[in-house]
Image (tube, rainbow, N blue to C red; front, side, top):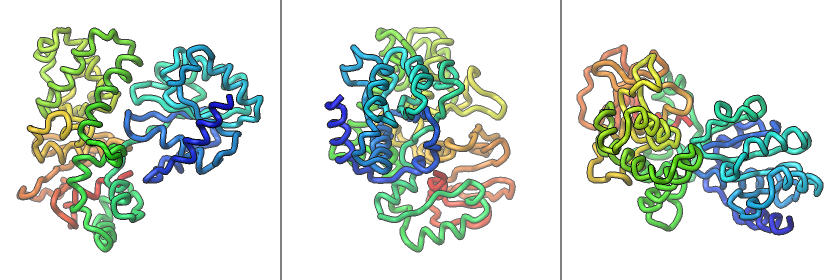
Amino acid sequence: MEAFYRTHAYLVEHTNAPVRRDLMDEIDWNDRLIGIKGTRGVGKTTFLLQYAKEKFGTNRSCLFINMNNFYFAGHSIVEFAGEFQRRGGKVLLIDQVFKYPNWSRELRRCYDRFPQLKIVFTGSSVMRLKEENQELHDIVKSYNLRGFSFREYLNLQTGMKFHSYTLEEILSNHEQIAKGVLSKVRPLEYLQDYLHHGFYPFFLEKRNFSENLLKTMNMMVEVDILLIKQIELKYLSRIKKLLYLLAVDGPKAPNVSQLANDIDTSRATVMNYIKYLADARLINMVYPKGEEFPKKPSKIMMHNPNLMYSIYPVKVEEQDVLDTFFVNALWKDHKVNKGDKNISFLVDGMIPFKICPQGMKIKNNPEVTYASHKAEIGRGNVIPLWLFGFLY
């Protein structure tokens, strides 16, 4: 146990999160079992350690452990949690919980046996905490940690402390909000860098970002999808090829029969793989209003623009990047459907949006909201696209 305390103390002491994530204040830390999901690379480990540092420092009542540790090949989580509590432990932080077999059953036992112990764990976005783990259905509170928003990226790069806005605030008051931001910085000077490499916090590391992201994408498929969905290793190449084909095709409706032929499998399996890729936050599936999986999506997009520049940089179209940025920004709290003719997207089933690249002539329809790429400030129903990066 002492080795775990020493590791915890070292990690907490050397943790220095570049941006304090808003999720830190959104979580009800009084709950006894808290799950924090997120795609690989968005900073879940740092988030746990930052929580430990803020609330406990090196106080031994809080302990961070990682299920990568070989110790857990021979000891159960329940056994460890019991020993930790006997030593005065109050809060156990478990990173990468899905690496432990029967992890949900173990967490349920901890919850029932140790009512004084709080457990916070991280897991992959592929995990369906409540749908697939009945043991936890009624006791776990689940949250999602996303990659950096454009606002968070801007704060990091400029030292500012801009706060987020709701969609309603942006729609009704975008001119005043934009003027306030523009009085301090020029957002458009930072937007292209964000689109290229700003979503994943590891762009701060002194390594080649694209290589790092490709490695992370491979891990998402090899570990998050194969391990959690218990898919045989021999099918790995099919899933990777499918992801590549979807990326190369650009945002459009998938030809499921052709894809099934290309990766040598059935149409049903292709649709399942597409769902797994969406769960892993590698792609987004966009449907017409009123439709959802298992129907075929009307458009498949990469989850965020960074992925587009890494997986197939020779074919990155500006319109596709801007659409992807918009959908990714809205996805956290809003439903995004495919729009009708001359409309890019329908948000929350009732707000039509048109995403306008530089140079596009806007034939203004008062019923439509236009998100304009190169506009620093908008007017009426024309809103700068960058401002939607302030939604979280």
